[in-house]
Length: 83
Image (cartoon, rainbow, N blue to C red):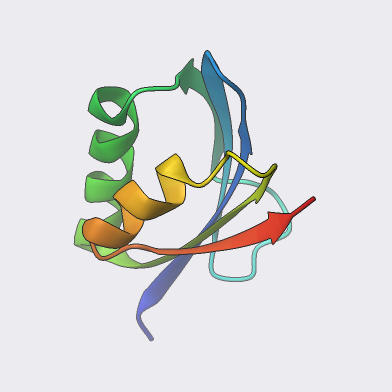
């Protein structure tokens, strides 16, 4: 069975908080707060992508689609909940 990573994000102007779950485990593999920059975000997704598939999500306001577009360009599934 291929490993599936589920990444939930809380995206803010300056930071992104990530909770990463492996398969359907109840406890997160890790939780981390990082600067909101693709230079900091992409290495995490690249590392996870070497070991399995990734699905990610976050809640976005009307102007919060930048991260989703960047992840999509990198081939990473990112669902949005729009408020």
